[in-house]
Image (tube, rainbow, N blue to C red; front, side, top):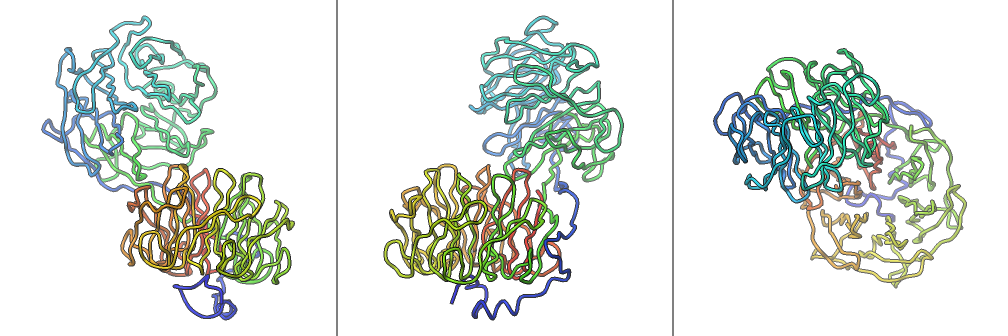
Length: 604
């Protein structure tokens, strides 16, 4: 009896298939319409108008250090204040003046790789450097229009080489300095043409090293390459979606989305890397979630929270990026685009989705919209046939590796679904399997197979030759009780969903135990028969918490961050989700909703 649904229900899969609920809408390769793009939700705020500790006067910039602490440019109070990740006041430094470590309207903060703070001391026309304790280190700049001089420097950004790019507002230019504060170059002149600037207020650098400038007086965002050469722009004056009014801040998230502080419209707008409008939040006012002329760039922390300087209201607002149901495709059945107990979804390099249609003993291919493209496999034990197809993995060459649970083997196919080879047989010896559930491929092309019934992980080379193994039955460190899924992080560590022990275990590339997280339960961070694990580009772990009918997100330390999903068959609900989720570069999450016989798409 296949144990794909073990810990979740009991009985033979054939009987289970008869009990699977019929979807309300029977769509062959159709997609269920869903919500719009996910929009952040207001959570809380820190600060209120005043001069005391933790109080703020026209805050115009916020930066977050590696410890999650917030450093706020408290412009009106001529100081920098530090708050912990919960928003509680920690410390401060600076007071009004022109001496070392003193300020005259500080408007921006940036933190370098060493944890040092660089402050745009706007009224004193200089940039000051402090250590993480707020102790003065150095400065550069003076009033003027010459190279290395400033007229109201508003903000700065630090590139991967440690160079500082300063928005020199009054001189309508961006200046570049090395980490010692020595002038290197500049771009921009006064005007409204391509590459010209009118009162630039903020600057952000994307993963490719391109510079995005909030060209406030021209009501637009301009993009330049790392040499300062003009590339493109978006935005026109107005209050409609995608229009801007005196934008004074810009930040870029890990997916490349741009978050623009649309100051005079008292809102934050989100754009993709092409400058296309995505969503917005905020409105004019002083209530929760409202803004009064927000200035400066927002800051994004490691838990998907956005911290917005609400300048006119004397506070910093916290917003959380929620994961929102978008759409789904599939229904119960045996036709094209229908499923019986899908147990995994995988994306290839072209963005296509490959679904393990487990109890139809086949693999189905869909495009990124969920439209049916093709399939391969049928019930049986011959080459290319399956007895319950498990979640497939795509290697660097585009080949497909599929766990064939009932036949106790791994089969290899080309990208057209044509059978190539196989390895494995029933048993407990080296290279044998007892219901292999899933596999992952490391940077060397080796395959790590979750050997469910033998409570172990086996390693094979790219030819399917046995190399090694780790794990045994039990609940101790490094032992397993029905392992279900495996994922490999950027450092080559192995993360295993240890389903029967209701935990996730971490091993190094040699299979040596390192750590674990999770206990049985339904509270945040607890697990019940986890059956899937995936790791995103930032190292976050997405765990399919099967019997709790949800997906949970953890950081690389195993600390709980967020969750989505609940029990049911409605939009955004799950019934025994099995296998790992698939993640794409746009923040979409594809979840195999097994007993609802569908794949769900969520947006973050």
